[in-house]
Length: 164
Ligand code: PNS
Image 1 (cartoon, rainbow, N blue to C red):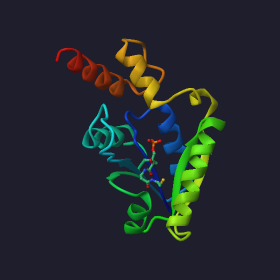
Image 2 (image 1 turned 90 degrees about the vertical axis):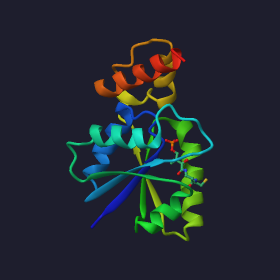
Image 3 (image 1 turned 135 degrees about the horizontal axis):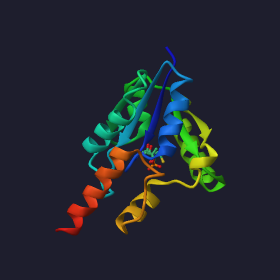
Image 4 (image 1 turned 45 degrees about the vertical axis):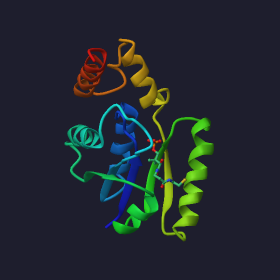
């Protein structure tokens, strides 16, 4: 069975991530989308919320599973017998960072974890979770960036933050 992991923060998941998930799910028997629990960052959505959102957003893709992990990706991959990580590349600016992580993971895992890159579809190449949050926090329109139910959840989050 060909399996791969697509790790990320997904805070929040965007149409760019969903495009990569759909295309990667067609290349593997099983794709595990795994949310990093990064204790060094304060996310907009908790890990549990992000997992729930991803499950809803991928419910029509039967071979996509959603999970979360803490610590090093290579350890998570080894525990789950995963040898391929999928990452999306939007532009050359992503490449340097991603190349370094991919090579570090390959070295640290003693060649057990390889990374494949999918180039983001052109229509989503401008998208990032950070810009979605910035647009939403200033009341801008994010309907072209995230699914409708995610858009609602993001606006609810900012409304709660503003009321505190
Ligand atoms: O969506 P992101 O924030 O760009 O995803 C980055 C992610 C989660 C793939 C990366 O930061 C990661 O794998 N972090 C876990 C810690 C780790 O294994 N780091 C790699 C060695 S430098």
